[in-house]
Image (cartoon, rainbow, N blue to C red; front, side, top):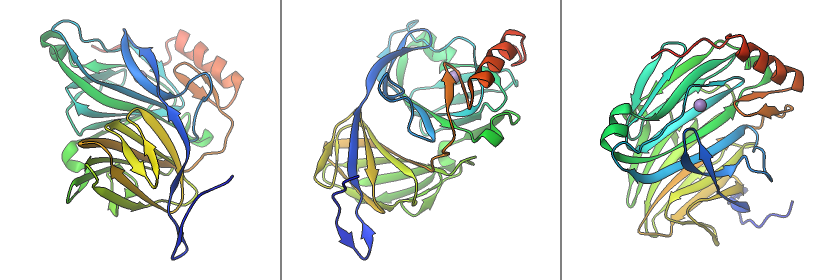
Length: 293
Ligand code: MN
């Protein structure tokens, strides 16, 4: 692959190798998300299986919508809230609320049922919603592990304030910070707020796929503009991101590819078609537990 890069102390400055505009998709009971993948042309970016950006939006009293109860098997769902109040329940009996900066890291493993969305209270009184949900694949050896759950509060995020920039790290190592999230495959997850023309720089883990997604406001990576709602795939050792709007909110993700076959259908992501059929059979016979209100 051709790469434009600058050599500096044998460190390659990361540059954009691909831009993926998000497509609009309708999720759950009818909320619109911006989705760089999966789409008809891009199923996943190993180890990441889905990236859904919801909001920012304002919903009227009684108009907030979430998801009905639904199953997952074979991967992790990671929900990060920027604005609003989210509520989730699952068949393990977990029930919780997420506020700005909070992350719910659910390892579906062998299977769980859950529902998620703006809190029932927020749906009633109306409010704002903004955040994202990432799906992280599990290696074959972990796909049938017991379901697990990490509730990561905003104040647990690693955080640094620089002139014109705020950096938070939720998992892995970025910007010299180590986040609290425990991962089954090596990934890192950061959220950066940038003022116009402010820059942040981070070393990148080698061998990882690296994704940069501006949630609000555009940014620049080298000479390339990356617009709001566009995912940039970057390659290199050292990444510098510069704000190109009054305020930019940017997600930085890195992940080591698992390199295994992916068989996916809706809420199940396995390695083979036979395992997918088994997931549907298990779901039909109630093996994922039941809704717990
Ligand atoms: Mn879900």
